[in-house]
Amino acid sequence: MATTKEIVSFRDVAKIYRGRPAVSDVNITIKEGEFVCFIGTSGSGKTTTMRMINRMLEPTKGTIIFKGKNIRKYDPVRLRRTIGYVIQNNGLMPHMTIKDNITLVPKLLKWSQEKMDKKAHELIKLAELPDSYLDMFPAELSGGQQQRIGVVRALAADQDIILMDEPFGALDPITRDNLQDLVKNLQETLGKTIVFVTHDMDEALKLATHIVIMDSGKIIQDDTPDNILQHPANDFVKDLLGEERLLQAQQNTLSVGDIMSKNPAHITLGRSLSEAIWEMSRHHVDSLLVTDDSKKLKGYIDLETINDHYSKDLSVSDIYANNLIKVRKDSFLRDTSERILKQGYKYVPVVDKDNTLIGIVTRASLVNVVYDAIWGKEELENPEDANLPVSISKGSENA
Amino acid sequence: MIDFLNQHGSELIIKTWEQIYIAGFSILLGVVVAVPLGILLTRFPKTAKYVMSISSMLQTIPSLALLALMIPIFGIGTLPSIVALFIYSLLPILRNTYIGMSKVNRNLVDAAKGMGMTTMQSIIHVEVPMAMPIIMAGIRLSTIYVISWSTLASYIGAGGLGDFIFNGLNLYNPSLIIGGTIPVTLLAILADYLLGKLEKHLTPTTKRSEV
Image (cartoon, rainbow over all chains, first blue to last red; front, side):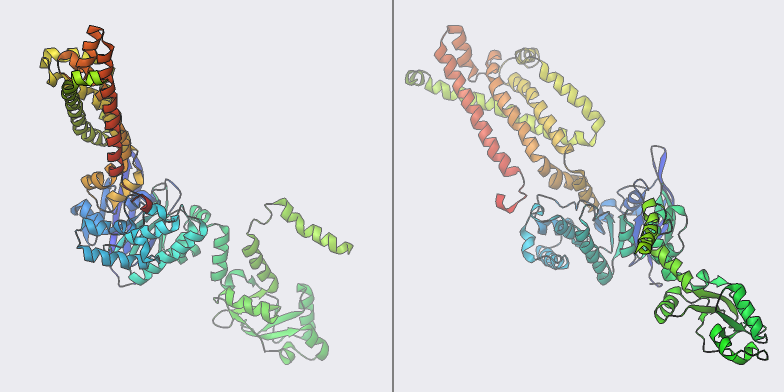
């Protein structure tokens, strides 16, 4: 994808309605084969921005380059025939059969009848509908089927780029899901560029390879879905993404270093066992990590071992165990947590690349992360929920 | 009745023809002017308001007075009657065309434009077909009005079935009045029926069962 060329680029574009800017400072580069989602609340300017691409609206300021040429240099009618267009309420002509609807743009382009017939059959297949539907009228189809036709109609004249303005907003969730799959599939197999306007973050994250977040006519963030999830630009983006998604994304990308406790209880090799015991009691732990003088991790020592071998003459270096699982600071938590939780380790020491001990991940610190992912960070918002564990523990006491 | 037909039969046919001619010509003119004007006005909504009120005003002039007003301009006979009736036919057609065109689903117009139709293609292939039932309703209404009002045209010498009625009034001859009125009514009903057929033909199908 790195080698693909740009198909549309906005340069300092602004659209002003009656003195008030509807969108301003828009700079977006859309590359061939990208699935771009413009997302934002109503009035954020996302539809306005999209409609400037096929000159349904003219920018007040700035330029839009389409295939290397300023769009003002194109005849608007011809330009629109090379750009697919899908709108929310499918925009099918109720007085035309499905076939006539599908071949509307080819007809405007004066294709031969045979070529149009062939195209109609090809497209109804892409829409995953039977051939017999070609002779029906839109009113005879369900909403989802109508929008399937609306989608494939935008492909009829082999348009390279398709604009979609909240195309699935009026559909029920199941139908919407199916249509999203259809569009994603078509986009991937046919290599089309799609510019998709939506206010539904789930939809954007599911479909897009490139998300442009807009608010009050300005671009807030323009990046890949992964980058947006991991580095939301500001609180607006965070709100749009929602706590739940952020936490999920965080859990996927959180590194061990992010959640480890620093300064774990440890002891150096040369110390005596009594010093080790004193250190344990001071930290309220039953085992200590063992390091050398330069803080390189060597192994661990636990209370049981000391108890079995206790002698005043022995030092830590004599009895410590070195069969120790450790993790690197920059490894992902999702890989580590599995190991800790499933294999029953109480803790895992964390080292940097020189094997220097820098922290520890315990089962307790994992609990917090899992808890956040399930309940969200504001777990005490609902007082009833907060009381729940109390009443449960009371119940168990009584029993 | 037989007597009436024996006595006035040939005259009745001529007068009926005159009536059809006057009314038909006025309506035709009305359609030719008002439908394109109505479509044009949807592109200029601000002007539309003024044009609508002017045509409403014309509608309020008493029909007899309007006919009389035509005499100084066009003299007497068929021409002034056609002009006067044409003015009457304008408003319902104009208003219905305008409303019909403005009521066309904006999404469809947007889709048509977005797919690359020219304004003219959008009007011809999308907007007019969609607005057709409302436009036709205006034409049917105008036709019935004009057919019945065209009896008054006889007052300024245009002939038609009005001649029977006015003669009947002058001669206190009810059979002449009735003999003039019944054909007018039948004419109006027949015209409405035929236009209904035309409307059905022109209104686009949206379901296979209607084909």
